[in-house]
Amino acid sequence: MRFLLPIILIAISISGFFMFLNPTYTEIKSLQTKIESYNTALSNSKSLENQRDKLASKYNSIDTQNLDKLTTLLPDSVDNIRLILEIEKIATPYGMALKDVKYNPIVADPTVNSANKKLLKNTATKKDYGSWDLEFSTSGTYDDFISFSKDLEKNLRIVDISSVDFSADNNSSSGTGMLLATNSSSIYKFNFKIRTYWLKN
Image (cartoon, rainbow, N blue to C red; front, side, top):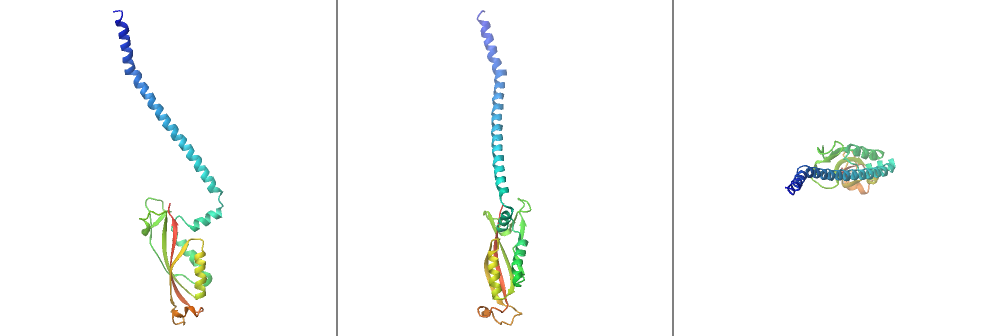
């Protein structure tokens, strides 16, 4: 009987540990694990914030004019109207008005905001940039054509001249396009096909 009481107390202690202390201990360990996880996430968040602030500081340090030039060089949308206006501005000094302007339709991508648009022909591509084709015709002399083409290629926005066809203008008395090389004062009709590029976000 004298030894039975300690055994009973030990049994009660063990039962109490498993019934009360062990679940509490397990819960504490679980909470500690979550706390460590949250601390790690918080640390990563602060690290990302610091990196973001550094990048923002570098971006803000870039001259505004240079940023505008970069945006013009490779815009983040097709911006077809602006391009057409730029080409018209280049052609105006030579009296070469743009006619018969043709280009591919543009639709908004439902997965991005309305400012970032994609061309139908490029929706399946995985490239970081898209290309856009534009066709137009204009009339002028051979010398004006050469000067206009050079200015177009030197324009800040990237533009590739894919092809150029020419023919005698209906209102011109030059007769035939074969005179192009010998009679630079004659008026000719030029059909341009150009390609430009834009950066996808």
